[in-house]
Length: 238
Image (cartoon, rainbow, N blue to C red):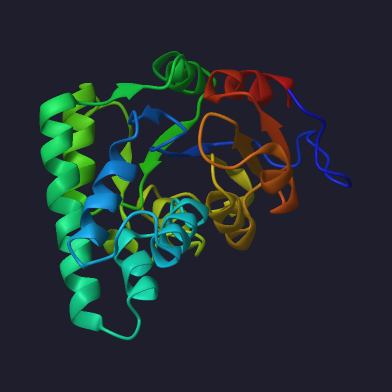
């Protein structure tokens, strides 16, 4: 476990009542399916591997990991909305096919971590930047359809990370009255920024995804831990 972000105090200010957990990279190990689907999607739009534009797009996709996928393609093909729509649809279709063929697996210790958070009295919400049908496919693949109180994707809330919409939607949907009672856990800068913008009481970065400790801390993470399996101990420590 790394040190807390300077100036942050992990001691209890409000009892934690809700854990908003990101899926891909935080609780779910996809095994590279997103990268493969993304490469196929931009390839169909004539973006050839090895070109500067290809490398720039791949770099943007990795940095924007966690953002709603249609927003990523909208930014990459801003000059051609129809190409953005086609690329997003291609990405979703390819990802769903790969998911059906290969499946995904939990990040090691994720199921136990969620069980530990429940034992500590927290409710659980799983969030994603995928479309609803893809999120459901992932949950079904893992046997997780009933593991959380709620699952949310950007279309359920308005916008995905780094906006706070899904976190605030979860708070309202579960009839909770204080965003400071929310803990947000994610592997990307976008996840952390969403938690900060929502006013969450605790924002936790994990190192099982795409952004490193420096990026997560710089985004404002209260604390960064190796993986979600360490998160229940943070709650116990408060």
